[in-house]
Length: 150
Image (cartoon, rainbow, N blue to C red):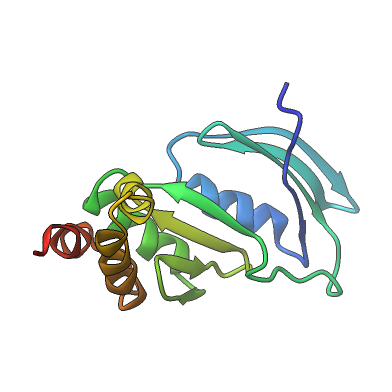
C-alpha cells in the first residue's frame, strides 16, 4: 500500500479527465469509481505505478503550478508524444512543463536532465540549466550539446 497518495480536486470533468489520461498512458488503471446523481464524483486510479485519488469538487477548486506531476520520459520520441498529447486543449510551458485542458500541470523530463543538472562539474550543470531555460519542450540533443561543450 502506497502511504502518500496525491489527492486531486477537479472543478468538473473527472470522467473526461480519466478518459483523456487513459488515452495517453499505456500503464493506467482505474481502480474505483463513485457516481453521484449520474456524474462521476470520485475515482482511485494509477498512472505508471503512481496512485491518485480524485474528486469532483466544484468551481472553487483550481489547479496551480504549485503542484505538478513529474513524468520521466526516456527518449525524445516519448517526450515529444507526451508533450503534445498532454498539452492538447491546454498550454505548452517552458522547461518541459505543460498544463492539460483540466488545468493540471505536468513536467515531461528525461532522466539525463536530472543527471546533468546535479553534475559535480558546476560549469557543465550551469550550461545545461541555461540550455533548458531556453526550451519549451525538452530536447535531449541540445542538453547533451550544452553538457559536452568545451
